[in-house]
Image (cartoon, rainbow, N blue to C red; front, side, top):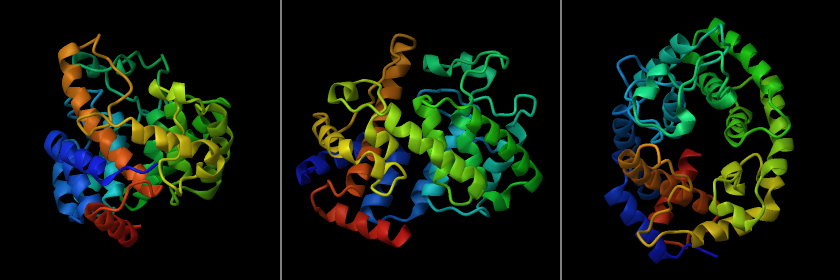
Length: 319
């Protein structure tokens, strides 16, 4: 099954008219040959004076202040834009990450205590540091990003957090939680990470991915470990191990497109902050729609259009 030109056009219209400026700029970058300048400018709206990121960059956390969670998402975008370690946005984010690390915990708290003062999904409720909560997520991913931008990081700090990360990876169960595994995959797929740690993460991910992936179509309508979540690109680490279900999941996602052209999140926290979820859901629809289009294109599932052809040219040029 292919995403038709008409369905792509509907998705494009949704992103360019309903999504946040960031997702609009990223769409134009990836599908219409725009430069990185617009997307970089849009991302600056989420960076705080302390160098960290917040301001609902991760829509489930409406906290204006900086958090490890939002900063890890920002690093994904910084890398996606191809910004190097000399970029002021990158250097500021690295400085914040070094300052926010808590040595006594051996990790970054995913969210700060004042997250509870702002609308948020229940899973981002801050708890006392002696209650582990999220441990590998987002810490393991943050270490991967810091290695990618190692030229901006303090070598001693990087050595310290790498040692802590080795302990986190070793402590993960054989079947880790979904987002812990996603952080592990980020570590395994970042070439700058030291080979020993990268290979350790890759070995764990190769074992865990096929073990926890949801293979039944009926599970994909809920908050499940979808195959494409673990292998969002045709060259992802786990793509060869999930080939038996990726085709069906691609067909499923094409069929899941909404009447407004978007793909919606398959989670909901409207029971906690109803009015704020309305805004968060709209923002997520922009994020998920862009992510889905990029995945479909990577697997060759978008029927050729003018915009898709330009995007392919961009991908070849930027790797």
